[in-house]
Amino acid sequence: MGVLGKIVREIKDIILFFLIWFPGAIGVKLRSFIYKKFFLKCGSKLEISLGCSIKGFKNIKIGNNVSFGPMTQVYAEGTDKLIEIGNNVSANVNVMLNADNGGSIKIGDNVLIGPNAVLRASNHVFSKRETIRSQGHKAGSIVIEEDVWLGANVVVVADVVIAKGAVVGAGAVVTKNVGEYRIVAGVPAKEIGVRG
Image (cartoon, rainbow, N blue to C red; front, side):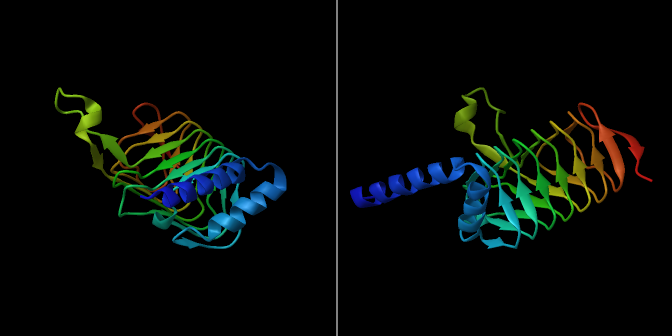
């Protein structure tokens, strides 16, 4: 990259910094209007709150009526796969949707994601006794089907499917698939009930 390319990148980073932190309703409208143009696909009624960090726009598809609460992070860099978010999805404060390094995340319609939830679709490799950082990542996928509620502080790891209508209790760590309409909680998450 030449000097001109570096200068252009720096200017873009400065503009994005101010856009991320522009306060109030005007900031929400500006972010939503400008970011819509960068996503691979984006529906209507997008709301992006103060402090949201989004990387890898070209690998992100968003449906209609989607909201990202303050400080939410959506990362899809270093992958040829996607983050796909359905219609009527709400991510509360400080949610992380991270599909960097080859992972993929698919979220169905009418999903609620509580504050501080983390969905991470790839993991560090640590099988050898050499430095973990040098061993790379193992990519996986996360699928959250429609009408799912993830409570506050939930962690969902790679290679998990949370089926339609499931509820994941606050603070749970989901390491295995969750069946339709099942209620799970705990570390690791275990079934504690069934909706309806």
